[in-house]
Image 1: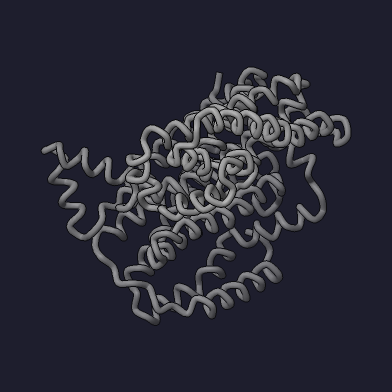
Image 2: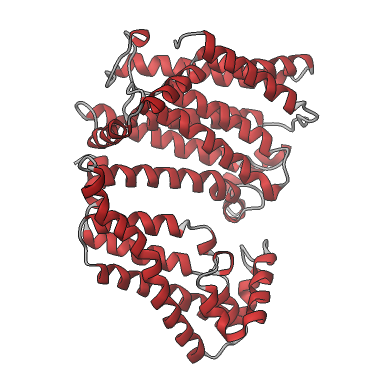
Length: 465
C-alpha cells in the first residue's frame, strides 16, 4: 500500500484520533514545549474529525483531560526535582525572560496561578514548572491541576467536536474531505516547524549544531573536514541538513509518484476539496498567481533587484541568483520530460506540457527561500525566524493556486517544493563557502515598489505562459 494511502487510512482510525488528542493536550501543557505547539488549531482539527465519526464525546474529553494532567504533572515534577538544572539548559538558558514572566505571574496569583495559568496562553506551559521550582505543596498542585483540566478539556474539545458533527449535514462536503484537510494541515505544520524552530537549531547557537559539532570533533576521520569547512566561519550545517533532507525526500516522493498508476488517492481527495471550494473569485486569484509565477512574472519580480546588484557591483550575489533560477528551470524541464505525467486539466497555453514537478511551486520556493536566507543573514539572531515564516506564507498561496486552476495534482506541488528546497540548499552551500560582504545598505522599499509595479503590469497586460 502506498505511503499516501496508508496515511489516509490511519487518519480515520478512532483509536488514533483519541491518542492524538491525548498527546496534543499533553504537549500543550508540557513545560516549554507548549510554546512551540499550535495546540488550539490541532485540538480543533482532531476534535472535528472525531465528531464527524461520531466518537463518543466523553472519550474525547477524557483523553484531553488525561493529557493535560500528565503534561502539567511532568512539568511540575521537573521544576520540583531539577530546579537548578532546568534553568541552565536550553531553551531557558537562552530565554530567561520566559521564566521571569512565569515567576511574576506566580507571585501575583500565588496558589491560584496553576488554575488560572491553564487558560492564559503565554504562561500556560511555564506555570507548572515555576510552581515546582517554588516548591508548591504537591497536594495543592494536584487539586489545581485536576480542577483546571476538568474545565479546560471540554472547553478546548467541544467547539471542534460540534463542528465535526455538523459539517457533513449542513455543508454537503465531498467524502474524504476531512482526510485531505488533515494531510494539508500536517504538511503545512511540518514545513512551519522546519523553517522556524528546526533551522534555528542547526545554526551555531542551536542545540543541534552544538551536539553534532561535539560529536564530529571526537571522530578523527571527520574532524579535519569539519575544521576545513569552519575556517571561513560557521559550518553551514543548516544548509547541509536541508540538502540531505530535501534531496532524500524528493527521491522517495518521486519514486512514490512514478510507481503509482495515475494520481495518488491523496491527489483525488485534495482535488475534490478544491473542486468543492471553487468559485469565480478563487478562479480569478488562481489565474493571477499563474501569471505571477511564470517566467515573465519571475522576471518582473526580480528585475529591479538584479539591476541594483549589477549597479552596486554585487557580482557574486547576482551570479548565485541567476544560477539558482537557471538550475531550477533546467531541472523542471528535465523532470517533466522524463516523467511525462499527464495534468488533471490542460488549458491551451499549457498544451504539450506535463505535470510533475510543478514549475511554479519550485520556482517560487527558490525565490522566497533564497530571499529569506539573504534577509535573515542581515537580521538579529532572535528575529531571523520571521523571515522564514514570511517566506512560507508567500509560497503557500502560489502552490495552492495551481490546485485552484486545476492544472496540477497535489503530489506535483510537493515534488516541486522539494525540488526548490534542493536548489536553495545547493545555492546557499556554494554562497557560504567563504565570508561575504553584507548586502546592506539596500534600497529595499524602492526596489519592492518597482517589483510591485512591474508584476502588476505583467498580470494586467500579458497572458500566462
